[in-house]
Length: 150
Image (cartoon, rainbow, N blue to C red):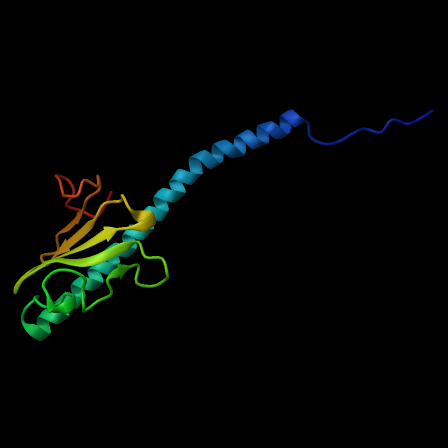
C-alpha cells in the first residue's frame, strides 16, 4: 500500500484574496504618497523663494533699491542675483523663480511650477512678507490664498 502524503500550499482563491488586498492598499497609499511628494517639492520652492528674498535684501543694502536684480539689470524676469530654478540642488527642477515686480522700495517674487509639478499653482512672496499660493491653479490669487499652507 501506498502512504498518502498531505499536500501543502495555497489555493488559487487564497492567492487572489492576497492580490486583492495588496491592490486595495496600493490604491489608498499611492495617492497619499504623491500628495506628500507634491508638498515636499512645494516646500523646496518656498525655501528657494525665501532665499531669493534674502538675496533681494542684500541687493537693496548694496544699491539702496530693489531695481536691477533681474537678468540684464531689469526689474522683472529671472533673477541675476540668485538661481532661477528650484530646488536649488539636484538635477530635477520643478519651479521657475522670477522677480515678478521690483521698484526702489518693494518687490514681488514668484515660483511657477513646471514639469511633474505643473498644475500645483504658483507661489508668491513680496517684500512685506505676504505669502500667497494659487492652490486652485487659476492663474491668480483669490480669497483664502494668502498663505502657503493647505
